[in-house]
Length: 108
Image (cartoon, rainbow, N blue to C red; front, side):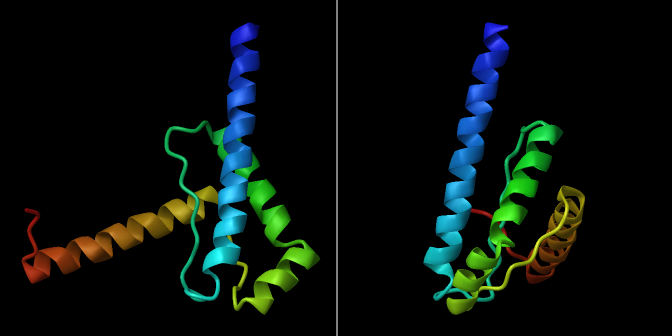
């Protein structure tokens, strides 16, 4: 039982830190990169936690006050499910793998 309590506390801390990073990141970089996406990746995190994190971030960035603040800075709120994000990552990986291969780019 004590291990589960520690796990929940750690997860809560991670969620809080991730939310703060996303929200401050959106606000801090919106003027420099208005069309650059801000994405959250938490490898190794249980699916339930990823779902909760996604739901909380979506709830916060879609709140009227937050949408207004982000719009004032040129940011546009978008989002999707973890599965949709995984598909985007997979497509980006295929695209850029071809670019690197076709250009003959090699790591040093």
